[in-house]
Length: 308
Image: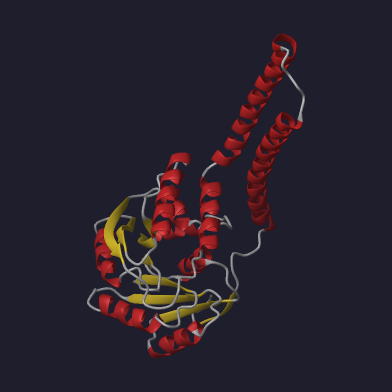
C-alpha cells in the first residue's frame, strides 16, 4: 500500500485536472494506492470538489480540518492517518509532476528510507523567489548541524519506519524537510523540473515563507541566540573604544566638544542591538510557550477515514 498525501488550500480550479493526471501516472504501478486529500481550511469550493472526487473512488480519502492550520501541519495530519507502507508527500497545484512518482518508488524499493525530489529548474517563478530560496537554504546549512538538501520541497517518499519516527516528534512549529533530514536513515535525491501551477495563485505568500524560514532556523539552530550574545560583546568593545577616544580627545588632543551626534549615535546603536537580542530571545520563548500549552496540532471537522 502506498499513501499519497495532498494538502489542499484553495485549489478548486486545478484540483480535478491534477487528480486525473495523478491517477494516470500511478495506474500502471503495481501497488495499491490510497490518496488522502487534506483540506486546510480552504475558502473556495475545494472541499466540494474533494467530496465529489471521493464519492467516485473508494480509494480516495479526505480530512477536512476545522480551520487553516498551515501547510506543514496539514501534511502532518495526512501522515498520521495514512495506512500505507510507503507515504508520498506532494503538492496538489501541479508543480510537483506526478510522473516523478514512479522514480521515487523505484528508489524506495532499492532500499532507501527516504527519496526526495530535488529541483533542477523552477518554471514560472519570479527571480526574487528563486534568489531568496537559494540564499535561505545556503544560510540554513551554514548555521545548523543538520544537512538539509538544497532546492527541495516536501515532494518525497517515506517508508513506514521514517513516518512513524516523524509522528513521534512533538514540536508545534513543523518544518518537515528539516525534521526528515534530522532523522537520518538512508536518503537519496531524485532530480526533476518543477512545473508551473495548473490554475489559481499560490497560497504560500512571502509572509508565510518568512514564517516557515523562522520555524526552520529556530527549530534547528541556536545561532540567533549566539548572535545576540556576540553582538553584546561587540557593542561592549565598541563602547570601550569610544570611552578611550573620548578621554584621549579631551585630555590629550584638547579638541573635544561635547554634543549630540556622538551621544545619539551611541544610544541608537546600542538600543538597536539590544532590541535585536530581545527579539531573537522572544522568538524562542514564543515557541517554548506554544509547546508548553500542549494544544493539539490540528482539529478535524469531518473525514471518511475510519477511526480518525
